[in-house]
Image (cartoon, rainbow, N blue to C red; front, side, top):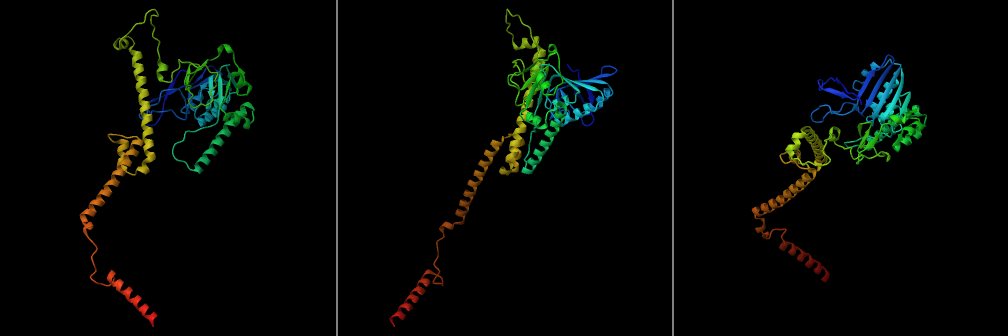
Length: 401
């Protein structure tokens, strides 16, 4: 298991320690060791609301290069990896930093090296795997928000293609496989266990099976437990069906802190809530903290989704005050409720407009005003008839002559 250490970072969180789940240490005059456990991220994750560092296992570039000073001159360096990867560019940066070390680098996959972690593993001169170790390669992907034009997406496609070419070249340098073949393997998300990784060139040595690391996955296929380390695998699409399913693996943090309570198998003791709290208060307190944290996380996610949905229909609503009240008022609304309220308001305004027109017409007394004769003035119907009769008479007189 990796022993965590901390360092202080500069900036707004300057006095808050960042937990690192890597350890770089000199283990002898000519040897050093680097442990890389956890997710590969571009920076230490922080809580969206509080700015506090998020607890967890993260491999970040923050301080990593500085820590390499402890082993940069060692003749033999061992790198132990148990990671599902993460940020591609961080993985490439760490790969390049390891490749730049002068000593002989032995990489041991102590569980899994997937995604960006597989790129890091390729920095080893000798990559060693256990029979149950897993290596996974796949194409790049990204989570997108906002609106994008066709040129934006075409540029993004070019960026994706360039990134995949860079990864394939790193794999090619390690395995000797052709770049096109590697990209095809990346497209279908290829998983390899120990001997398959050796056969494909991603690993060089298959270690003794007696020291193998076990793997298991949760029933909902969201959490992978490898060598005692939990990995979030919700983003993977082609998980091997050979990984055994364990109902003991839970997707909540409570599983990480679960404690076993011994009981008499001959007699089941019924306890009240007060008795349970008195006897196992630490467990109850942990469950309550986990439940509160999960509820808070869910609430934040739902609130963000609600505000985003409202923003998507703002232009069609058009009422600034109504939108503000829906977002932040005493009685906040969902996007659906806002749309219905806007429709009702428009209907009310339309009905009021018709009523106002009717009232204005009644007040003007226009209904009681009839057409008045023009008193024989030119342009009246009587005058027009006389002119027509005169013309007809003139015409008739010309015919009789």
